[in-house]
Length: 257
Image 1 (cartoon, rainbow, N blue to C red):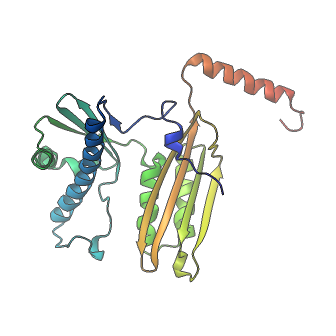
Image 2: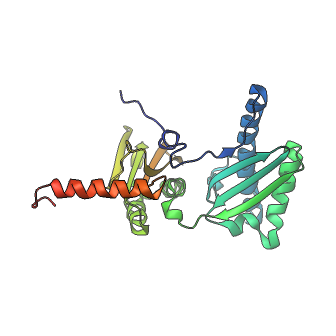
């Protein structure tokens, strides 16, 4: 069987970076910080979702089928930085106004809740907008999952998402959906690939995400890979690569160029 590696984990230190930025020399402190970061992220998702439901005037119990969306604010990622006793939280989202609220009331409310829950006073929360949501694998997968929950055809959802991503400027996209598609008795996997997605190239900037759609027939998994192009450490490496590409083209037969 093929051994799968997470595209982001494979490229850490090359063109990807950690979502938790801090250092603890002692093992026990490190363990506590990892667990706390995970709990902070879960708490933020939960509180933002609860706040949106309240503002909509809906009386929805936790886990209710009336409001399935686990990420209504379209949060791409939450980056946590630590300096001594201070914690800096940056929320990347395509809907910053939903999180910030009127005159920043919602973000201040969220900050006070985090301080109370985790017993930390020096907490700073910042919201940044994702400029191109269609180039974010997390948001594309989330969009497809919500469409499948609304009984949109999986082929239509996949194809429209892939075309939209390519129009924005991506060089390639791969989408896979697995499960009882359209209520079929047997689970299967379907995929759409546009452009190229070089998973073995370490300098390739590939965004990957996994999401799940809770449908009437069970859980459907959605995987999305988006290839944004090659990244280089410096200009010299980029020039060397361009020279090699020109030499390759020069050595090819003219009818193939």
